Length: 359
Ligand SMILES: Cc1cc2nc3c(=O)[nH]c(=O)nc-3n(C[C@H](O)[C@H](O)[C@H](O)COP(=O)(O)O)c2cc1C
Image (cartoon, rainbow, N blue to C red; front, side, top):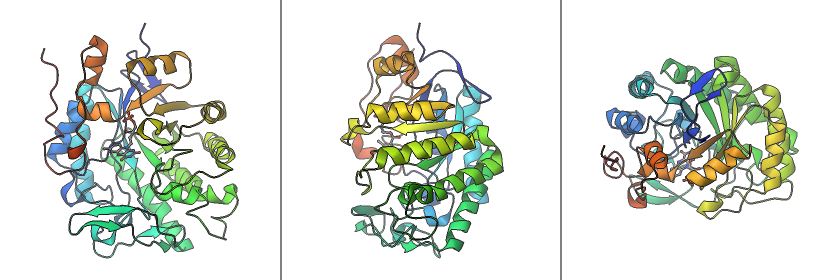
C-alpha cells in the first residue's frame, strides 16, 4: 500500500496525495507579475497533492532577484488568480510561498524607491544576478528600524490576505535558505541589541510576529512555514546553539498553531546534513503537519512516510523536470533529468517543455 499516493488532510483541506511540489524560483515573472506561461507551468504539475509556489515577495523591498513575482499589487493578485483558477480544477491545492529576500538582493533588481533591508548592516558574501549588469556582490542592507519591522510585518499580513484573494489555500512563510526571516534567526546576520536581537527569544521574535500577523489575517489553518536548520545557503554558517535555537522556534510555532513546518535538508545539494536528532526534535515539538524536503526519490519518500518521520514529502528538481511526476512514480517509468542551464532563464524553454509520458 502506497502512503505517498494515498489521500490525506492538511488542516481542513483534503490532499489527493502526499506529494508536494517544493517551492522553485524560476524567474519567468516579467515585471514581477505572474502570467499565462506560469499558469501553464503550474497546471502541468497539478497532479501533486499540494503545490507550493516559487518564492513571492510581500513587498517591493523583498524583490531581491530579477523577474520574481510579488503579491502586493492588484495586477499581481489578478495574475496569480489565473494560476489558481488553472490549477484547482485539476486537483492540487496551492500555497503561496512568501519570500522577502532581505539582504540577498541588489538594488538593480528592485523597483524605484524600494530598499535592501536586513536585521543589521551586514552584507552576505556572494553575488546576485542582475538583468542589467550581470553578477554583482550582494548589497549592503540598511539595518531595519522598529518602524521598518512594523511595516514588514504588516506587508506579510497584507500579502497573506492578497494570496487568499488570489484563490490560494494558504501561504508558506519562507523562513529558510538565508532570506529575511532566517536573517533574523541567525546570530551571524542579526547583530541587533534591541528586542529583535541577542538571545534566541529575541532573534525569533520577528518570525513569530510575522507568523502571528499572517494568522491574524487568514487563520492558522492557512499558514505554514519553511525552516532550514543547519542550512548554510546564502552565507548562513553553522553555529553551536543551532539545534537548541530551532527547537525553541519549533515549540513557539507549535504554540501559535501553524498548519505545517516544512523542513529543508539540502545535504543532497552539498549542504551539511540535518542531524536526525534535530528532525526528531522538531517532529516531537510540533504537533501539526511536518513536510520533509530534499533529495527524495519515490523509495525514500515512501519509507519516510511509513516510518512516521513526516506527513508529506516535497520534491523540487524532479518536479521541475517532470510535469507528470506522480504518474511516472506510480508506474515506475523513467524520469527526465533537470536542465540547470534553464532554471532561471526567461521563456518556455526548460520550463513548460519538459515532456510528459504519452498515454
Ligand atoms: C531552481 C530552484 C529554485 C528554488 N527556489 C526555491 C524557492 O523559491 N524557495 C525555496 O524555499 N526553495 C527553493 N529551492 C529549493 C527547493 O525547494 C528544494 O528544497 C531543493 O531543490 C531540494 O529538493 P530536491 O532534492 O527535491 O530538489 C529551489 C531549488 C531549485 C533547484
